[in-house]
Structure formats: C-alpha cells, structure tokens
Image (cartoon, rainbow, N blue to C red; front, side, top):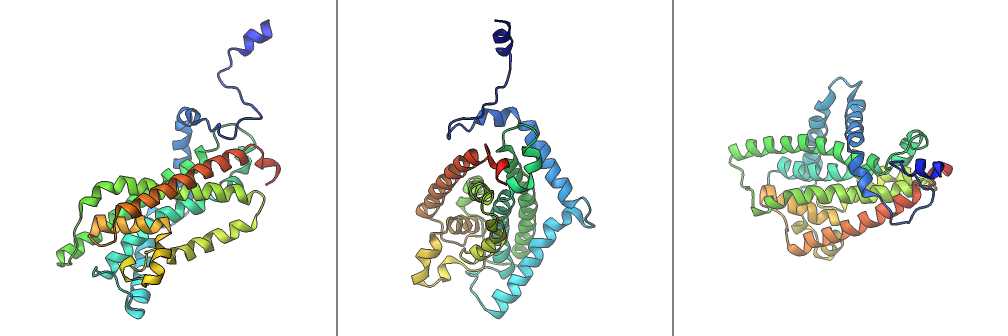
Length: 285
C-alpha cells in the first residue's frame, strides 16, 4: 500500500512502449524553457569563435546574390521578371535559406545530439524545434537586408511594389519552417540506419534549389517543365513571397493550397517517423 501511494505522487512517468501516435505535445509546452536554452546555445556556439560574428547573417546572402547576379543574370542572361537582378535573387535566397537551414540542420539532430539524448529525458522534438526557431533569427536579419535593398532600388525608381499578399507573409514563414522541419525529421530518422544519407543532404538541397524558382521566375520556365517545377512545394512559397514583397510571381490559391497540403502531409509523417525512431535510435546510431 505504501509503495502504491508513493508512486501516485510522481509528476512524470516514462514508459518504454507507447503508441506510434503518442507525441505528447503537452510536454513541449512544459519544456518551453529548455527550447529557448537550446536556441540560445545554437546562436552563441555557431558564432562564438568567429571574427565577424552575426555579420555573417548579412555577408552570406549578399555575396550569394552578387554571384547569382554575375553568373545567372549577366552571363546566362536569365530573366528576372522585370525586377532588378539583385532584388530578384536576394528575395529568393532569403526564403530558400530559411527552408534549407531548417532541413539540413534538423536532418542531423540524432547524430549531433546522441550524447544528450542518451543521458537525460526531455521531449526529443524540442531539439529540432529549437533549430527552426534559431534559424528564424537569421531569417529576420536577412529580411532586413532585403528591406534595405528594396529601399535602395525604390529610391532609384525601380518598378516594383508590395501587394495584398503581404498579409499571407506569416503563413509563408510557417510553411517554410514546417516543410523544412518535416523533411529534416524524416531524414534524421533514416540516417540512424543509413549513414550515407547524411552525405547526400547538403548536395541534394543544392540540387533542389535549381528545381525551385530561386534563380529564375516560373513565368520564364519552358511550358513543358512548368508543371514539374510547380510540383516542388517551395516553388509556390517563393513565388508567393516575391509577389507579396515585389509584385512579381505567380501567386494563385491553387499553388499556395498545394504547398499547404504537401507541408501538412510531410510534417505529419515526419513527426510520426521521428517519434518511432527516437525510442530506440541510441541502440542503432
């Protein structure tokens, strides 16, 4: 009787076998302080021993924009839908970088944190969520750079304008984050058994960028390839992002609806697969 009454006072019970759909979202809220500690850790550790520190948030997209302008704009003479080349490329890079960072960094969660996961209990989903939130800081800084460039070209008299789609901007950010999170969760679960996938992620993300409208508008793509490019859910998101801020892009209810459906499906399977793998990944990694 004493043992039973004593066990009733436990505030948390950890079970070895749980349902596949038992994600315990309430635990995420209870451990919200840990989430922000991980975000702070990621931000500090990444730039701790760098000379320029957070300035790299500006430098990386700025140099990438200059390279894209020279290679794709001047040498290849690819259309930018009537927009200034630097503005066109920077808008695509800003949106793509957030998605790509969420995907690539989430895809190595199990491998990078095996020492923590094996020693202490906390909701494992906290770790990939912290990556998404910490990358959001970088996204906001790069968005400021985009605003500065928009102000410069507006002063120069360039033809662009914000549209009503700017009200969908929070939705677009959520879609970029959740799509990258969902894909990253699937990949990190698979890499516990198939290590080769970790070597393909960075390379694959770079290739995927060329299948998205980062360096060219969908309007300039050959008709026979448009449907294939539109199948990439990031295409609709980036097109909507450009349409919202610059007034160029193919923003339709179908394209954004398709991106939402794919994101929800990917995130659902990502969480389920992650939830199943995190119960025994320490034995296989």
